[in-house]
Length: 381
Ligand SMILES: *Cc1c(COP(=O)(O)O)cnc(C)c1O
Image (cartoon, rainbow, N blue to C red; front, side, top):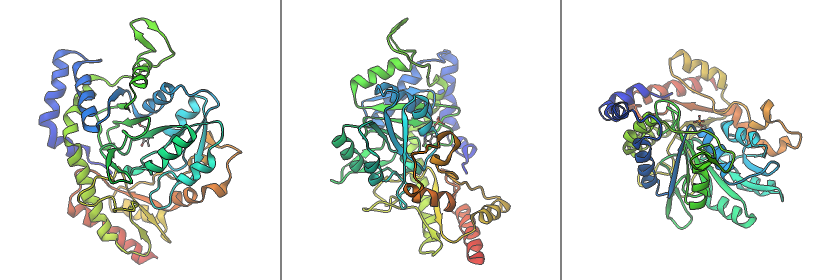
């Protein structure tokens, strides 16, 4: 699904010296590389504060701790996403409220959020799923109206732009009250281990969070709040700082691959290609709306298991993200949920398939993948 070896081979000359600097200085924890990366990412995202941490799941948890959410507070998020989002809500003894997604964008459905708001609701967590920004203007308006926090889960969307109603653009992760991201190796900006970060434009919240990631300390050995230990180590920061200048080119390469895929599958009656923005298809030349963490098709009347087997036989990796709605996962079942409220997610889990998507895909590989998919679907449906 990804080609991290191919990517590393091309940037070895900048990554290796960056790592070597850390090795030679032996500043493995909180070294200058961490600070340097933090500043460079703040500039890139145009956000006031980046607080690095150990991984994207911690980032979500720490963001929620920073906002002072209390047990019993309800937090609304999407039913169709990676489990980390709902996991941290439950871990903090907040009440997860899962809602359905939009069938075209796969992102959280704003009308479903509206219906789920109660007097106990404290926050909304939109996930920029597969690299496409959620409907942030509508979500921010709704949050303002009901006095709710917005926590963007930007683990799959880093580097993407959100285009506001007035045409202006903001980087995903710089729109809500606070955002989280992951630097897991396969993410759009991946390190060579685990890593994550929290973003916010709020000075007070940033201060609170900087203490929480460091055992609740604001002054050495004075523990004012219950915190955690969550650090981005200097070697990972060195990798990320070397890769950050390539992020836009990486996302452009992903969009190029997506455009090639889209062209091959265009107008096919059994395949819906990713799209979803009213103003553009997310892959137009002058925008960076979709950063294609995943390239995901929605199939109609195709035996997906047989297609997966056929792709595997042809040595083409593929993935099903995600095969089970979160509201049906054992850990998160809740008698308050009503199946009629999850029509879209219940369908998507049976019909989506993600094809290889990364920075090193070439046209020949894409042609092989698309012709293998099309040959199978045309012969079997
Ligand atoms: C990857 C991911 C996370 C978690 O990131 P880790 O660094 O693996 O903890 C959270 N949310 C979403 C949507 C993700 O894709």
